[in-house]
Amino acid sequence: AQKVTQAQTEISVVEKEDVTLDCVYETRDTTYYLFWYKQPPSGELVFLIRRNSFDEQNEISGRYSWNFQKSTSSFNFTITASQVVDSAVYFCALSEVESDNAGNMLTFGGGTRLMVKP
Amino acid sequence: DGGITQSPKYLFRKEGQNVTLSCEQNLNHDAMYWYRQDPGQGLRLIYYSQIVNDFQKGDIAEGYSVSREKKESFPLTVTSAQKNPTAFYLCASSITGSTAPLSNQPQHFGDGTRLSIL
Image (tube, rainbow over all chains, first blue to last red; front, side):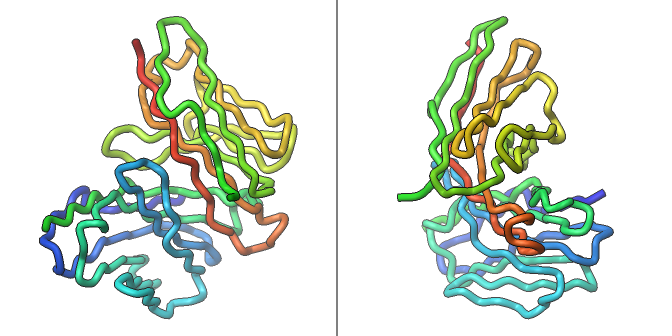
């Protein structure tokens, strides 16, 4: 069965520090997708990135970067020069393709609460 | 603007009462989902629907019911059988894999409904 683990329940940093949020996943499928979502205090989940299992290139988007390592089943998320507005709960999620029957189902990790202090 | 609207934002339930949470989307998405989020935890899937007049149970369907009479709407009823309904409920929608094979498009989320017991 699929599983997503975010071992860090809470991280606190000072503004301008870099911070990495860890995500480890388990799946038997060879084709799957990984996602990161941000949940600010207002509650809605904001989509950040989607990565398929065949694309191990790291991705950078502004201050955000993602490191996908299939060998260690990890999809870590780094925020460079963190800002107070980055404070939120961040969720990693997995979507299996082969065993999902096109249901587009997501399995979420428990989330990491990031607090960026001024 | 296209998006997902959940209402009400806050809801209170009395003992033995059924309550219904509304979820409407104008994104023309085929699939819709209901999640439950407990404090400090990730999201757990309650029900999902890939097409009108069809829906499936998720991981924690007991004590909940849904309907999908229209593509745009996917209301969730929290019945009196759900003994611990206090939680944050999130609705989401997406393009299904049947529409965009192997793409696993990201799910788009509403702002959530916070349900409490009186």
